[in-house]
Length: 610
Image (cartoon, rainbow, N blue to C red; front, side, top):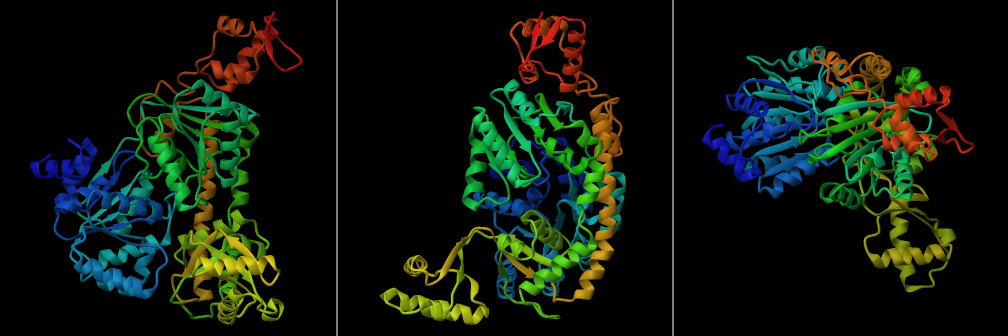
């Protein structure tokens, strides 16, 4: 590391040295080469563009699909006194123009942007007028139709290459098969390429696949076997995150939950808990983990089967970043494993379902064919799902899919909004002084919305108190909304265009999802090979047997240890809390001892020594 790099990384990040792969990637970027790097979770990808951005002339343009991660990085850079700007999320045309002006004249070093912004010709035009040092493309696998999170808007990055032919590109991803890597290089037209592929192997990570009919008891047993350990427990629904959190707290395990439905303040508090507590346990959806800088996570537990090996590998990579022994536990029931691919295929949204969701949305927002509203709409997730007779998680997933395909912009907001039902005749007489101002405000809002039921933002606490008083007197109906989304179309409404876009992009995605679900199922059922070798092979790499996974090191408890432990009657959960083995190995050993009449099972389903 040269002296300038060393001084910069020490001044802004407090590091004395870079990791070898970081150093190699940064050197290539500093030499203004097109660069592609596959770096596992926790390897420090963000520093590979943040550090060169500080040293090269001009602005580094960072493209990312992860709004939460961009928000986190902006906050972090601000704390380090580094000027950066964000161009993501719903915003009016005037706000966009103002921010582009600020970028041009504000001496910024980094600009973070969602790929969908490139659909706006103004953005492309202004980028051509700005001196860019290089373009960093995070989550670069999104550009490949073979990638595990393909986003068609990423294909717009080809427009950047065509208009900014001399600007170098750095493409970064945590996971990519050889097929995906080739697709990234081709789509971005990378030339004179510097290519860096980190090893998939995680030598400190012991992968254990546990099958048992009572996952709740199994989870508690694992956590009790790992006291004073930082742990992440991944689930695939918000409701399950909250339910498991309650279960674990009742079992005297201190933990919290995290999902995308929390308020900004709640998210901040949970993040602060996880970063600062001595041994935090977090039950979370995939919304948690990106950019979390905690090196001593000892266990990542998947309570639900991840949708793909890519997602699984990315999430288990959050354990053991301090290079000390860590565990990755995957809990399931044998029958759910054998039916996983079929169930996943059944749950995949069809093109028709997504197009129907789009038609419902534009109808609800009263957007005419060819129209592109200038301001975003506020949409209640629960209210709109109820209106269309859909489950909230289905409607949410559909909106996110439409966003992924660059059809809409969609972001959660935590403004305090109210659903008001107002009718001037039902309001009746205005007997109180505050009724008059309330009546005028609500009459105006009703005329603008052209509906007696509308979302309203009270401009003052006095007006809100007046509304609450009127609601108690049955003059209006008032309901607080805490699930608001800001939504707008990314392009003018064209139903035929949207349908063709979904046919072109979503149908191949459906096929790919089926393949990935089948690959995940095969990984779960492959108990005759090293788990890490299976993952390495999936990503086109070869590796030695890890020596610590459930295949390499089954850790069957000895007969003597089991008989001694069961001198007091013990349940399977008790045994799992004591012995570091899989439930399937434990049950095999217990059944063998019962057959030999060394153990017996009592009426409480507990094993005891004869």
